[in-house]
Image (cartoon, rainbow, N blue to C red; front, side, top):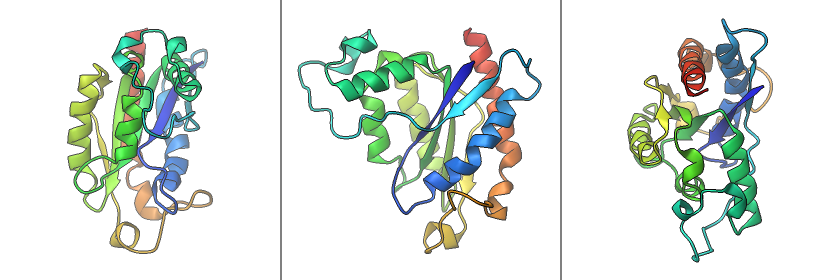
Length: 200
């Protein structure tokens, strides 16, 4: 079974990211498995072993390490193995101050070769949909030589969720405004599925 990893750009609590990821996971599964043979299902996982914290081992740079098992830090080694085994990625990121969050950049910078040629879809969210964040992520992921889907999804948060006290729930019924993005997510998932098939 192929696995697509859903990488959250922010784990801020309370925040909207975890709630959007809860809604997004089954929609991605539906899109990735639509019109595909039952013998080759794709699963979506958003429980990544993240190497949170700064890169503290200055004895190497990630581009020096081609074997995931050679990373000196055990948390980074586990993350590298996970990334290497994934068939593709969906990056779900908020836009913070016109860019992607520092924690996402830090997570990506822990590795180098493991990202190379991996298919990826960018889904952003924010008061304006996160379009500036998506553009900057395209540049960054291009540096890793990832295969970036043409289709982005930009989820525009209503004022109640972007500047207000309401957040997307992590369980239960998602807000109706989020369902408006279902078709876009399904299309992006199908493009990701094609990119994964081309890679195999």
